[in-house]
Image (cartoon, rainbow, N blue to C red; front, side, top):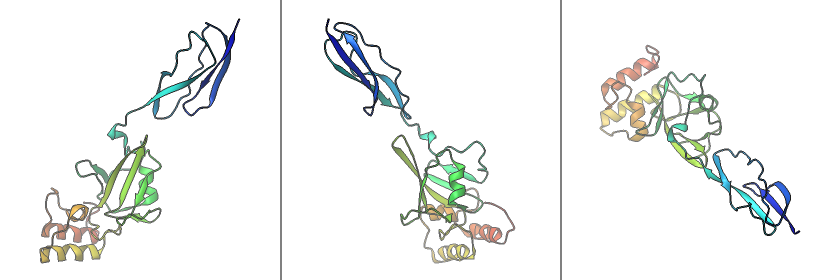
Length: 212
C-alpha cells in the first residue's frame, strides 16, 4: 500500500500539521489559525482522495473595513468637547487643543499617526489646527484634520495672537480657508466668520466662557 505525506500550512507558510495517508485515503485538517482582520474560508486543495504528496494551505478573506471603525472612542474616554465632522473629515476640539498623548488616549486605535500641518511627524506637544491624524485598520486608512476652535494660527492653543489674526482677516476682507476658517468660526450656528466670532473668541481668551 502506498503512503503519502500531507502537510497543512498556515497563511504565511507555517506548518500546522503533517500526516501520512494511504493512497486513496483522506487527510484530517487541523484547526485553522485565527488571523486578525481575516476570516478563514477553507483550504486551497481537496484532501479527501490522496494520490501523492500534498501541501494544503489555509485560505482567508479580509474582513471589510467599516468606516465607523475608524476613530472609535474608548469607552472611558472624556470626549465631551471632542467631535468628528464626517462631512469635512475634521476632528474638532471645542475647548482648546489637547496633547498628542491625550488625543491618542481618546481612541481604541493606539497606533494613530499624527503629523503637523507641514507633514512632519508629531509625537509630543499639542496638536493644533491643521494637524492630521490617521487611523489604519486592516491596511485601510482614514485621515482627519484637526480643528481646534479658536486656534487660528495652528499652535494648539487659543491666544491673543488668534484674536489678532481673526480680526485682521475680517478687517482686510482676506477670508480664512479650510480648517482655519472652521477654527475661526466659533459662534454657533457654525456657518460663517464675522465680528460675532471675534467677540466670542475674545470672551474665551478672557476666560469668560469655557468652550465654544
